[in-house]
Amino acid sequence: MSQTLLTAKNIAHKFDYELFTNVNLEVKERESIAIVGRSGSGKSTLLHIFSTFIHPNRGEVTLLGKNIYSLSEEKTEKIRRYDLGIIFQAHYLFKGMTALDNIEIATLLANEKIDNELLERLEIRELMKQKIGELSGGQQQRVSIARVLSKKPKIIFADEPTGNLDKETAKLVMDVLLEYIERNSAGLILVTHDAEMAELCSKSFKLEQKVLKEIV
Ligand SMILES: Nc1ncnc2c1ncn2[C@@H]1O[C@H](COP(=O)(O)OP(=O)(O)OP(=O)(O)O)[C@@H](O)[C@H]1O
Ligand SMILES: [Mg+2]
Image (cartoon, rainbow, N blue to C red; front, side, top):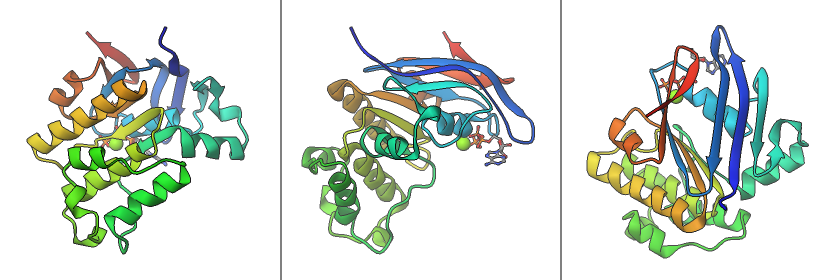
């Protein structure tokens, strides 16, 4: 039986206007979920709600068996450090440091080792000694993905991880993510504007007119 990694129940949230109501979602081991929808529909907000960063106005999120918005700050911090892989639009790499240093920080914090095969796979192994500032945008993006996967998260939240990449590199990154969840019995929730990337996932949902609906 594959374990449930995330359950979201009756989620509603508003900032200036109501973004969505009654959002329900379940993510199991080895499952990849794509979320598509127009700019401003609330996809990034939803991802932040699923991943401990925004407390929703209504509803509950259970991550790895824990109701995340009822936990202490300390316990939330622990989940973020060991279990979550966050790939958001702005990737926070340390610019003055090398690619290797950036990845090492993550592996040290999570008690993991650097996975050279992964670096090879993402075609960034040769770049490890270079400073982040010397890398292209797409190379930086792949370093940040390597950094996230190196900590061996149980569930990955990715907000347009292939947004600035050419088609071929985007496909490569997507294959690496899907392989990762398969091998590690992890889960993936991916926000994307790219229908081709969404199709590679096990399920796709569209956020439209305040509801999250499965595309079948
Ligand atoms: N912290 C915040 N405070 C106030 N309003 C916010 C905040 N975060 C997001 N919003 C508003 O919520 C709406 C949805 O934003 P969100 O970033 O979730 O959209 P999105 O679907 O991810 O869009 P895009 O495809 O452009 O990334 C926007 O109108 C945005 O201005
Ligand atoms: Mg967004």
